[in-house]
Image (cartoon, rainbow, N blue to C red):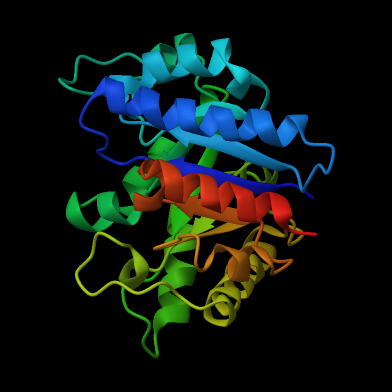
Length: 263
């Protein structure tokens, strides 16, 4: 099965020229990979730029070698399809830009912007209604004795009112808050610890929604070229959500190289 590499650019880079440079560098690597007779493990690449660059990044993806290797995603969506809310971007607008994936409930939005499970749930329904593939972020803030109960509550709150078929369309990104690179003292999780949480997530989905444990589950949290092999080497981890490393062009290509080298 293909591994997923989700590039969450967050609030970077500072200019369109830098965004173009990242994409050109990535494009050159992918072109060389496809031209190589040695081949490599295939992967699905999703680029999620800030809204201000979405249209231009979408154009680049369609007119370069990236067209066959990468698709466009965004980092958020407003709940209402028709809205006058200042500063928000709606599903119909994103459809016209060629967006295919939407990140929902990232920990930075949950904890720093106060998005509740109810808000994330409404955004998830909006994402599905508009025909996008949701990348739903799940993760505990503190890994204490109650973290399993916390994960269960977050999962049931996030997927409230959705059918098993709708949940089955979602990609889940497990991202423990303490591992997010933008947090002080952040440290990436270990594959063993991440797997423990992923098993819990799949168990809750199976128990609560009678789902077979076949949802794609990714790991996110300080992913870089030094640890990505360890995470992607686990069969139960279907890919990675890459934050800061995805806007460092050399580092990001190293991550892609390692992914392609996996057996």
